[in-house]
Amino acid sequence: MHWAIVLPILAVAAVACTRRTATPPSSPCEEAVKTPSLLAPPSAIEVAVTVDDLPRHGPTVPAQTRLAIHQSFLDAFRAHHLPPVYGFVCGGSLDAHPEDGAALEAWAAQGNPLGNHTRTHPDLHKTSISTYLADLDANEPLLRKLARGADERTWKVFRYPFLQEGTNLDSRERLRHEIVARGYRIAQVTIDFYDWAYNEPYARCLANHDQRAVAALKTSYLDYAKVELHWADATARALIGRPIPQILLLHIGAFDALVFDGLLSLYEKQGVRFVSLDQAMADPVYTAEPRRPAAWEGTFLSQLGESRATKGPPEPLLPEALLDAICR
Image 1: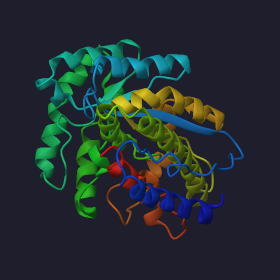
Image 2 (image 1 turned 180 degrees about the horizontal axis):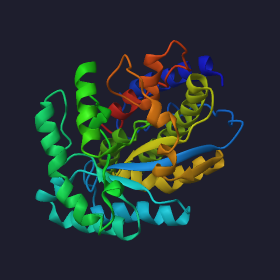
Image 3 (image 1 turned 30 degrees about the vertical axis):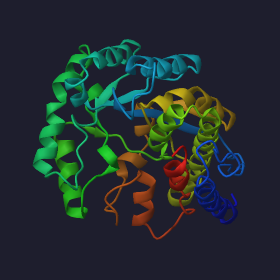
Image 4 (image 1 turned 180 degrees about the vertical axis):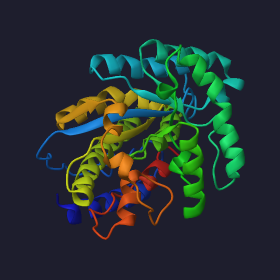
């Protein structure tokens, strides 16, 4: 994979789009969001799809309920014959939006498990570990109810909010110990292509009635999804010496729902074989790693790269400039 070529092009795309969006919002930067095609891997890539922030992520868009957003995901699960997909729940949003409970019920009714993402999605840089753990515990009654009698192992799967595992290495070790002592398995992430950040600009573009910009966002989303897929596969091979089941992070936002079916089709064309999170986590790499890394937040592969002398390809640049500027 020609990373020395790929990454500078991504950087130019982000900068170019920032400059072009100095023009009125009707200019959607279609050309600037293009990314180069990457060579297919030598063998299929196994990917477990996971979805964070159920039942409510990102801004509300017109004529689309949270139940409808969840239903878009569920329809795509069926259409593409995915195994059960974990959704990670922040139950605190039900305080203000009790109607969103129907979305969680629909998710569970189709046989998709729900895991713990804390109750209110706290930021470890603003929260003590004791308060953070209390927030995790407070989410359990809802998860136990939604599990419909399933054993605790099913719902005692934890995903760190913001992928923050601590604020330093000591707090990371302490927090991990406390979570595991509660009986949780930790759901790592290896593919994170900034999907969450597309939901706010999507809402802006809809408010501006700018469908060309929405189309540009779709192109950018899918292009970065493909780049990150191949980066994760190449990085695992470089750091571990073999392919591993990858774990994809998505969010339950309106734009994610719009593009999700296309994302699954794209990944299928790249040779992806979808597996369950349980299948992925059964790989020994997720139990033996990470060793004490030099970092305490971010994806599993990023932390692994920090802890080893062997380096993989540099991480792809993210489209922050494009997403910040479009439809302003």
